[in-house]
Length: 256
Image (cartoon, rainbow, N blue to C red):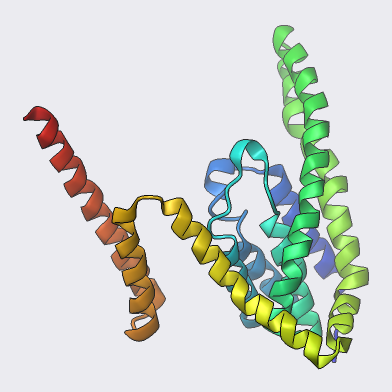
């Protein structure tokens, strides 16, 4: 049976999207709060069902594993995809794969919010430049910190809050009403999408010499029974050794 998101829960999830939109600590945030897993964890905490939210978030993390944003031109918004699809999955008990398939079009729509943000930021940037020329430090702080944070409450937090409060249960209900044959297709699409993420990251690795590490870790995780965290820590150790030895050999070659 579907449950309804309370207004407080919707506001808390909306504020997460606002925080992501403000991009505080951008360099660190690219690999932390801006990816699907942290968003899924927050949804799970707020809605009281961390396992379901994390299952959806883990699948989305694989899909967006190789996502690149050259020059700020994002092809999709993984954060809004995770927040909405995880919320729908939790409140409506929707099939995980169907929720994952739902996330893809939501992420594409979310990019349009980013485009609106860039337009507004262009106006604020011109104001900031003027404040810099006038050595107006208070003005610089307003146009580069206060105003962007304020308007993003309207651009990010409020729409997310309204969508989740009024629409999450309804979206899940519509998915549950879909005929089983179509739902099977959605489940299949959702199951295949993580493989697309793997393919993208393999392509981004680029160097053929590094692909054996990736494939070895994949088969090790699938057939050895070793926990994923242990494999990840082992991968960090191997990466350190690889960089150390290859850099030493390249230095020796240059000296020779």
